[in-house]
Length: 223
Image 1 (cartoon, rainbow, N blue to C red):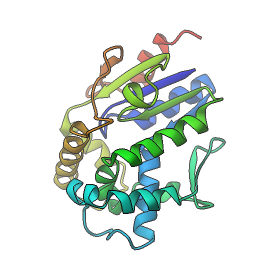
Image 2 (image 1 turned 60 degrees about the vertical axis):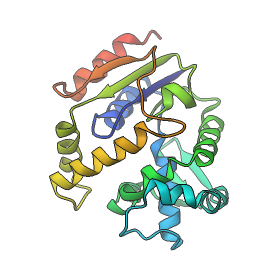
Image 3 (image 1 turned 120 degrees about the vertical axis):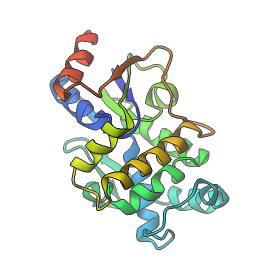
Image 4 (image 1 turned 45 degrees about the horizontal axis):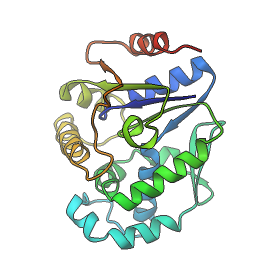
């Protein structure tokens, strides 16, 4: 069984997906961590300057180089603890740094890199029941998912939630601007664009608690 959840940053996707997976006793998968791990690997290898936000245009201009590098990385998922393993090291705590945040949207806009990540996700989850969340889980990666949801929220709510996580050194206004920039990139990707699947349940989480959102989702699922 695949339960797919899409939506922009700050809508509660990760928290909701984790809780739903725990409630149903199945595996949680954050698809965005694939792209974050690739971005982190590029930064650690000195191929990206972590202090400079990579533009979509520059990423596309370096497509072949970035894809070749990504293909060489060993990326696994420890479903027991829900952590990504990059080249043998647990990098879960490094995936949401400001440096990774600044370039991940551009990296994920490279279509061949998306194909690579999608293939790896399908391989890893082929024999699992999972709750997966990201930007194109319901439309591209798992279009045949049994259950599809799209979580949304106002940009002010998105920014406040990201700020409250305490994992960024940016101000609230800087986070808001970054979310607007990233979502614009995500909505205009040549492939895997952020959009609501026709058969997905749309949930505006702006005024809902995590428990309320989880309740809506679980009530839609027939085990």
